[in-house]
Amino acid sequence: MSSNGVTDEAKTPLLEDQYYLAKEGIQQDDEERLPLGRRVWIESKQLWHIVGPAIFSRVASYSMLVITQAFAGHLGDLELAAISIANNVIVGFDFGLLLGMASALETLCGQAFGAKKYYMLGVYMQRSWIVLSVCCVFLLPIYLFASPVLKFLGQPTDVAELSGIVSVCMIPLHFSFAIQFPLQRFLQSQLKTGVIAWVSLAALVVHVIVSWLFVYQLKLGVIGTAITLNFSWWVLVFGLFGYTVCGGCRLTWAGFSTEAFSGLWEFTKLSASSGVMLCLENWYYRILILMTGNLKNAEIALDALSICMTINGWEMMIPLAFFAGTGVRVANELGAGNGKGAKFATVVSVITSIIIGLFFWCLIMIFQNEIALIFSSSKPVLEAVNELSLLLAFTILLNSVQPVLSGVAVGSGWQSYVAYINLGCYYLIGVPLGFLMGWGFNKGVMGIWAGMIFGGTAIQTLILAIITIRCDWDKEAEKASRHVTKWAEARQEE
Image (cartoon, rainbow, N blue to C red):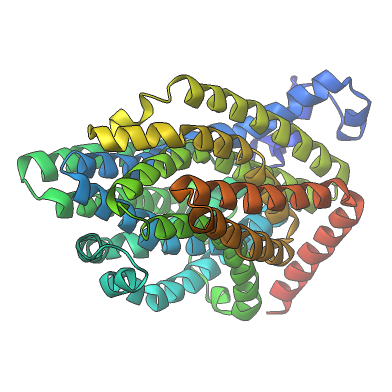
């Protein structure tokens, strides 16, 4: 033991709470007897160790999409609408499903890391690569036939045709998700978040340079803006992969293994539950854009809503970082058999995210007349965005809670239950209510959005909050310990 109370083991991928407690000279069993303020401070340090780099990396990654959309917006209203549809509907559909399926690693790797079964993390990641790559092949037709699908869904012909061309250009981006998402979850679960942030920064720099080159120097127009995303996202893949296999994860990466091909069915079922849970949330907002495309003067309405959704998505990277951080903290604590620690991590994360949500709510309300200037100089579009700014502010506030509660569900392995909740709240309540207010009461895009947010998202958040409050955390810790033991025994038998 060193003089500062930190063991050599704490310098390896040990549970971060043990590391911080050791630095404070506190035994883990004594943590509950500490003053509340000090407990909150210790938990916040652990949480922000994950959330801080996660916010940066997610904002950097999303900024690539925002930069692409901004370049397209200054080419013209049609180009902005086409890129918006391609990003928010085609790529968004794909992104939501694959990201959700990869989040199964937050449960598996997080709990295995908490139980110190480090060797299992690399095998789980390779299984996720296999499952997501196969899924990418099956999803390929949505890129190849995007144009007729969008026309069938009622989008304007010129927008649908250009969106179809843009979607084909994004096929390499599509396949990058299958490798990058599992790598990110693998590294987050063992608290190696700094490398994700640095690689994301490098990818963002590459994206800005390539965007300037393709649009302003080579004059490739909207096609050029779409192609730039392929370069930047594959920089993410190669950067994270290189770090992992070149010695950055010595305890958790032992090379490629044939074990990755065993137990695929069980892994696929958990991945599917995770995918359905998150993509039902992700697709919900894509449906909002599709419904708006069927309104009168659809191009202006689509541009205004897409700008609001882009701003919401940009800010949403912060709650999604808390989603990841909460999932890792809860999974680590449950894997270590510490139910009370998981509960306390949940409370601290929710309160912190709400405070940040209130800050951005105020920011939107103060700058509601200026927020759209990044994307468009069209006066009708700017006026339409200004009308939607109040709904945007309340959406951001509500979404400061919901992703964190979803992170608790992922960390606890409740994905299948939450999938049913999302299906009922979003698609049996939210979508019909949005349709009724948009067309039945002639409220247009504001009615659609308000109905879907206050009818679907608010109810779903309330139900998740009730489930989390009533959770028996000690029982969840016992269940997680049994699962990790079962996985380890199954591996030894293989």
